[in-house]
Length: 608
Image (cartoon, rainbow, N blue to C red; front, side, top):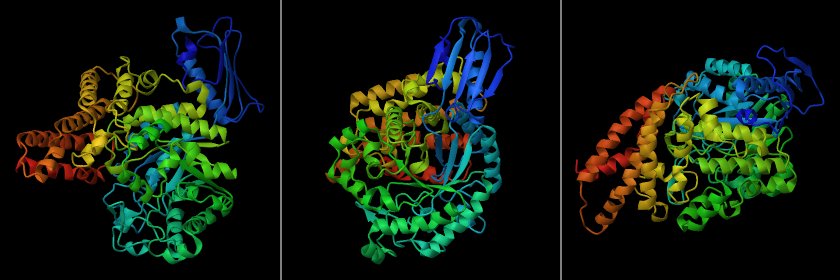
């Protein structure tokens, strides 16, 4: 049926009697102000071919639907009427380029193609230290950062595709890459770092001082002229050390929330005064309901939540006290988040304040993604956002701990997030494998979409509810040892191995023909092999066994460690090659280095 071929699925569409227009039938267009913003009405029939549109965006989306209809095989075509407009005015995507992986221009161009397909109309490139600020080479010199020329190029490309490129620079938390240098360390809230639930964290939060507000404002004044947009995201999330150093006395006097908002408002104000709409993450402010009426006009709190309600409930039921303490140390009441976005946005909802919702692609700390979680998380965000009048939906792809998930792993969550933020009810049951194969990759075999969906479901099938990560990456990051309740059982590991090995064999059959996709299979193949290594490490239980044997004075077999070490070294070599397919060299050594503890543990066990 022709309507099933449309992506995104329109909110209203009906087959009508009569023949379809010829391939060269003239198109009649008209501006119709009665349509909702970005909306269009398309009559596709032999008697007339007409497109009414609300604005330039509506014209673009109507022409996209028309092109898809025309591309359907003649024997399958039918006359249709379509009326369509978006659920969310702003349908955004945010890409983290500050956790080691900075994309090449070719990779960014491919992403823009995918965003345009999914009718995403806002792109944010999240930076901490990965923009080449003049005079601050020390912070970015090893990162292969975006330059002003890169940003202007990307802004032009986005504009040509109906996408607004919005600057996104963190201005409060997540400054560890800057504060690692002596020249910037005096700007830290706490210069010696802190222990969080038994884990040491280096300084990462700026002190909320006037001098720092001026400093970050100067950075923003250098960054923003490269963008056409009159929007700005200043970040300001996860200010973990706030109130423990420079601001301790003021926090004791006014309260931590007031100190936080005082600084954030100071950073925002010059931009609001200059006609900007300023976005900021709402995780800190949401803990202080009494401050809701002090949110500055012209600003938008963005509520992020990256785990689905069902996963939250399952993980909470299995959680140890040590894990709970870790969330508490990060200012998160884990028991209050079991209902997802409605809990996360509770203070803003209660105060009747506007906010955006920000789900995630679940393509970080995972290797192959956590697709089940991403889909439920994105639907939850859309439902809560629609119920409370949110005008914006910002899907996010973070890069925590080295960004081992290659770019193509995020394409499925990107197009699904775009579809449900365009029209939730029409797209919540989207055939994602079909969309990936036909629309994203143009894979005549249909293999690539199917395989990406299957790979993305492996983490859930390991049957250990883990928040914000897959056991397949966590076991690599944590040097081969996971807590018992987070360690998959033999049957689940055997099932994962079968899926990955079968999929690896089928990957060679894929034939992606879409521009920029020639290297996708190689990147995904590397990720699958790395995931299979993680399965082998879990199946062996070697390093967990070594820890127990050492405690009891026993010696474990070293031959298995040597085999695993040799495999890991080969994988790290091929990871370097796969990385450079779509990413710049800066950050590669840091990303690879995150697995040094695992490699050292295997070396020690191997007896080298």
